[in-house]
Length: 630
Image 1: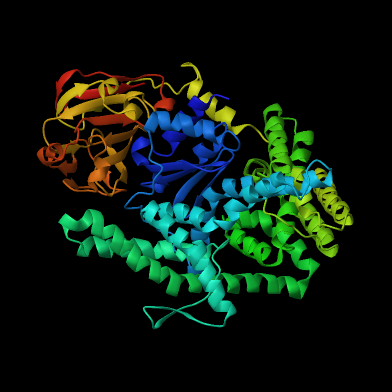
Image 2: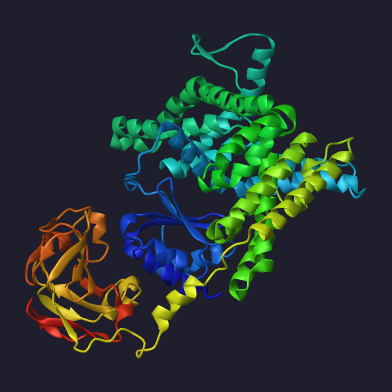
């Protein structure tokens, strides 16, 4: 797979380097934080070879890649050297959400980066079950005890991992956040709180403020609330601390203020919230029994699509910590994942498209043996629609069967075939049989249902798109007469290759030219209309009556000025005539702020023309022809 080519196309189709605030990736997705999602060509992104789908969630533009995500991410970073930190000022999310949706999005976004650590620890727990069963490892030896510590470490100190992830989510200091989590897990704190609870006494801070007893090991919500409050404590302390004492006084005050807030108010509150949420979920299970498991299994793919599946992790962890097992959500999740893999396998068998057969086959393997279902869900079943129904039918059947025979999960590992031993109950060898039958039934039903329901075989959209991008000049739209595009600014014309920004210099966004402006005015280079006027006023997108789409970008990285020194004179949708003033800007102030004012002029729909070339050199005015397209 050509990762470099995929990265270039993705970057171009999300609006270029200047539209990206930050970029991170999880196990299957690129997670962009963009300045303006409205300029992204969603359909083009979806059709990019290597892309399995997109999601817009929690302020992120997520592109599902699958198992190759790390390779694509590496190539994207070569192009943009993107930050993986949460920006100080995140873009406003215009989509209105209710409180519940916001809470689920927050928990899910924080849990997602922590999942690999949980999986690693859980797989060790699986070994602790499997190896003694086959006689390889004694449960009384030192090796077993050491492996037990390795497998339990990430779970016991879960608040520390969550604190690190939450600090990035909320934009606060990572080390303060981790310190608060460590205070909550300090052995002495746990010991004297347990002693007081056993003696039915209340611990009091400053002799009169009661500290409510709560256990924070394995917990999630308490530390999320604590880190959320930490950002406000940091701001307060930063304001009241004199500059000369800030290096030593600020850290002390942050901890002295935040730790009591966490231990006295938010920690107990979070524990209560977690217990309430867990009680609601398992009350449903108690009322409906095994039917509830079948329902959860059937609808679980849509929970994943909503990005809420990680929000259930703290509930599962809490149940395992308190009872030693979980017998509701984990079973539904297992059946759903197996069904996605089976449905994708059916598509791989039945599809006549060679490339898509390979995609479906690898997606099936990923779901069945690695427990990663995004490639199957977004790249196969959801894309073809009808296989999704087959997967839901298989998942529901498996969930009903597993629930009826009271399957139990004893660890949070990747829910795949290879981790079936996490469903084995000690002293009950028949539990392995029920787990195996549940998985087998799910796979068989989902596979057969998908084969019967069928699907409309895929036509490789990406190949069609690539044809548009690589087709010969004879097949490209060629005009009888060349179109001349006037210079939108007065100054010196230079080639794009001379622009000090790789996105423009490498023509990732399209071909064109650049102007080193002499004054702060941008003119309409042809008759047409304003397609996009950026809120910051640093760029404008135009569509000419002749069909040419043009991007005029004033300066390099000037979006960081957030509109300062720019004054747009037109708005999106306005009809313009050649020579009309579009934007005025204070060129001297922008230079004083340290920004390069070189202005790229890009033909955005370059792929529709056989020729796009710069025709001007040296000094140009608004009457000079800058670019020719044909």
